[in-house]
Length: 504
Image (cartoon, rainbow, N blue to C red):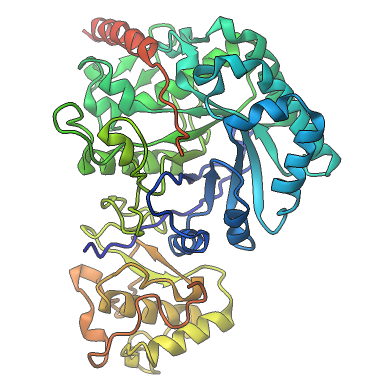
């Protein structure tokens, strides 16, 4: 059984016009196509223990929303495709939906956006005429409830709606979609809402028949002669993700829209597939893609067109979904299995409090910044008492006495317990006042458990093991559509050939 502890952290950065108000962050999608769906309280316990601060739901399940109440987690709720007909035909139905699924839960549930449908234009073209009426009716309901300042409305698109997407400077939206896209972009512009886009380099790579290099799909470093060059702008593209995001920016500019930010609502890589026809759906590739993606997004690298501009991104997805139809890989996009066990190890050394389940390079358990001092003290008392941590190093005159404050002492004790328990899942929680980091908290002569590869097991007194969830702990469908990416693949074929010529 894997003893890995896995988690995500929101990093708020300064915003510019196209950043959106939250700057750079990583969120996760939560699907429920499983034979045994975890209870909402189990899901929120996992989210909180892993410090996942942004989630997207594929519906507005009341039990899930109730479990998310007062957690501070930012939530995108969704109108499922099957509800578009009713909402798009009735202002009253939209008002009722907002009253029941948004207003009834806000602000205890930190709802930040409503995603109306999922890839409607590419998967349900007959429903496209209902999309803008549904969005406008829902916006009317938010305005009536005085929530429009806090909650944005948009709709996730497949990247396949962008034609001739490479080079990005020549990209444009499928013109047959103009009757919906033009008013949608005007709406997004007027409300300060993002263009939601699903970006799947895995499928672009798989359907390119070897034209798109695997390294280009996985964010791996490329030599200059392998980078794709936009001949019109001379911008160099080192990965598929940036190329698709910039294609969206250029496609919007083609319609004279230049100040709508892009939010990537789905992206990821499957960690398992059928070896006969999905050989690159592996744990190593999933680790490489998601680890590099997270660094890329959280460093606010931006894209070649908009360097330094944040692209908020949601990883697909939190759990493996074993009942999803289709190829083998469809079931294995999760960061965790149904039991909350990490599907693979991400390698994010140096990223601090961020998806720090990297045990190849060491992880540490530290006090959460800004945690309540009384809760920290209670957790510290438990760790040094029933938790059987040897806290003698915290005594006056000992190497870890200074700084003499509850946060520093709790960090020492939490980390000692975490390593003494083999870094097992749930051993760095302490009622939510502890988080995992890849940054070594050792200082001076105070060396923490795990520093330099030590496992810290000697820091537990006796052999009795406390519960893995800590005694102080208070917490006991088919939604993703695969768009046609053939236009991207065809464009990349030509562009890669052109870039090679330019660089010779």
